[in-house]
Length: 605
Image (cartoon, rainbow, N blue to C red; front, side, top):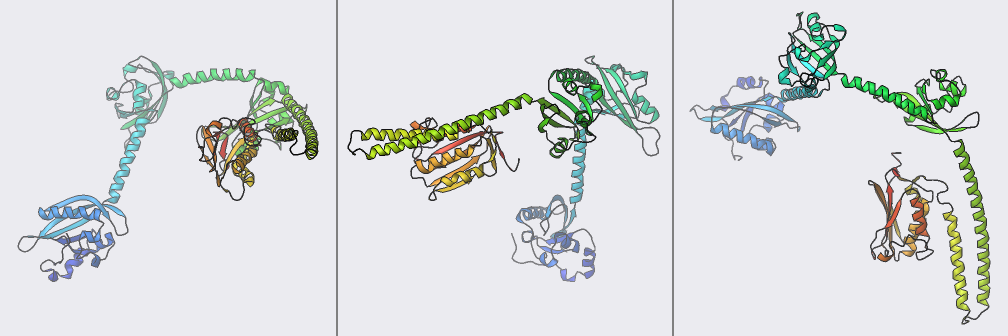
C-alpha cells in the first residue's frame, strides 16, 4: 500500500555530493528505496533509461510510476527481499515511459542502518533485451537450419577427419538403408553397401580426404537391409581449419538418381507416346521458341504446309507460313507476352481456308516464358455453315416479322369490326356477351403475337458478360416513384443471354403492378459455391403456396402469363435457375441461382 509519509534514510542530508556524483557516473541504471518501497534516490542512467526526471521518481512507489501489471510484480519481489534480507536476482519486463517494453535483469540487495536493521534496498537494472533478441535469433537460426537439415530431400552426412559418420539426416537414412544410430561411426566406404564407383574410381569421400578438394561421383550401392540397388550421386566437400592443411571434417551429400533415371526413361517413353498422339490428330500443332523459330511440328502441320518436318524446324514461323521477312503485324505473340494468357483468333490462308488459331505461352518452373505453342483447327466448313444458318435465321426472322406485322394488322381490323358491331347492338342484346368474348380473344391473340417478338431473339446472339448494375438501372425505370428501390450487387457481371435485361424488367413489372401494395423493392447478391444468388424481393402480398411451382409456366399469371415464363427460358440458356421462395403475405422473393464461372467481379476481370 502507498504510505502517507516518506522519510529519508538516517543521515541522508549528510551524504556528500561526491557519493551522488559517483553513483551518477555508473552507466548501469541504479536506484535505492526505503523499507516502505519508496524511491529515495537513483542515478542519471536510471532516469535516462525509464525516461523520467529524478523529481518524478524520488518519493514515489512503483504504482505511481509503472502500469499496474508491472508494478504488482515489482512490489511482490521487493517485499520478498525486504522480508528475507540479502540479495535477489530475477528477470522481468520493464516498460519505459514511451511505451517500449524492454527485457531486464534486476540485481537487488538490502542495506542496513547503523543499528544493523534493514533500512531499504538498492538495485541495478541490466537491459538484456538485445541479448535475449540475439539469443532468440540464434535459436531460430539453429532451429531453421536444423529443420532444413532434417527436411532436406538430399541426404546429408557429416563426417570427421577420418571419414567416420557423426551425423546424418533422415534423407540419408532412407538412401543408405540404415537408421542414424546404425550409421554413426561407420564410413561411407563400409563393406555393408558393396559400393561400385563409375569408371572404377575411388569413393569421393576418400578422394576428398586425400586431396582436400571437393569430389563428385556417381556411386552404385546396395541397400544392406533390402538388397535394393541404387545409383547415388555422391558429393563430398572437405573443410579445413585456419592454417591446417588436412580436413578436420567434411560433408557428403547424397542424391538418389535411381528413380530419376527411371523417370527419365518413362519420360522418354511418354514423349514418344505423346508425339504419336499429336501426330495422329488433324489439328495443327507448332512449338516455337522466344525468337519465333519452329522447334517442333506435328504431321498435320507438315501436310498443311506441304513441307517435310526437317524443312520446317529451325525456321521462323513467319518465313514458313507467310513468306515474310519479319514478324507479322497481326501476330498473336505480342498479345500473349502482354497478357501472359492464351490468345485466339481466325486466320485465313491464301487458299481461302480459315483456321481458328490459339497461341499458348510456355513457361518454365520459375514462371519465365520460354516459348509458345500454336494450335490450329480448320473451321472453314463450320464458319460457312454458321454463316448459312445466320442468313437462314435472318430470313426466318424477316418472315416472322412480316407475318407478325400482317397478323397484327388483321387483329387491328378485327378490333375495328368488333367496335362497329358493339356500337350497332343494344347493351342488353344477347349477342353482346359473344362480342365481348370475341374482343377478349382478339386481345389474347395480340398479346401472343407480341410475345413472339421477344421469344424469337432468345439464344440468337449468344451469351456475353453483362454488368448487372447497368441492367438493373435501366430495368428499374418501370418501377413507380412511390416505390422505394435499392440494389447492392457491386461490380457483379453475369455471362448470360442478351435478353437478361428483359428478365429484370419482367420481375420489376411483376412487383410493381401485380405485387399488391408494394412499397419497397430491393436487389442483392450473395456469392457462393457452387452458385451465387441474386435476390429480388418486395414487401407485397407474395405468391400463394399453391402457385409457386406454376408461376413460371406459360400462360399462368395475372396478365399474359408470359413474362416469368420468358424469364425462366432466358436464364436456362446459360444454365441459370430461378425460383420463388417468399412467404405468402410477406412479399415475393425471387432467387436467381448463378453457377460459379458464370459470374465474376468486373474489377477482377
